[in-house]
Image 1 (cartoon, one colour):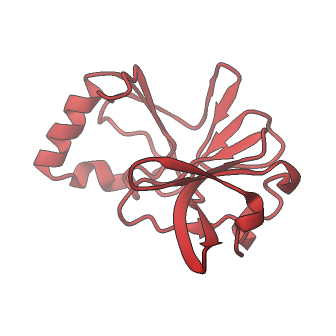
Image 2 (cartoon, rainbow, N blue to C red; image 1 turned 45 degrees about the horizontal axis):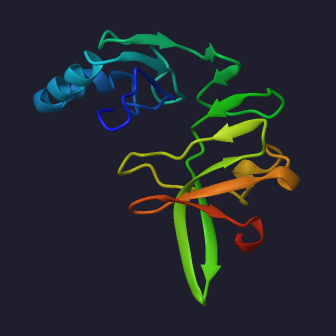
Amino acid sequence: MARTGAERIIALGDSFHRDEGTSTLLDADRLRLMALLGKTHWTWVSGNHDPSPHALGGVCVDRLEHRGLVLVHEPRRGTPGLVGGHLHPAAHIQVDGRSVRRPCFVHDGAVLVLPAYGSSTGSINILGPAFMGLFDYRALEVTMIGKDRVYPVSVKRLVG
């Protein structure tokens, strides 16, 4: 937040991975989160693991429409401007005989799925069954997350 100057944070669901997750936060984590909540406008989009509103702070919604975007937890094809989470996309590429698999941003100009940032979230290959039918693969754009920056990926390099 400090680096980007973000004035608004939108969490796309499963922020606590269970409905009672906010009540089980450690005191230190709760204090750190409360400090962050006090610095910007915060919106929590409900997820499949944390569907109920909570009293932690910020605003809790099922979906958010903002400046032509529709922000949801579970992405579905057919809504232009849709931004979703839930699927934890990862790209798998081979370069110079080495194989690399990293979380990624993936979109087709209509639907964007964001990577997960949690330490225990896992990842799903964007060419796998969970993503089938979600994107127009002719317009697919992928950007992998590296340690210090992001990398655009040629779709031709993707490995299923």
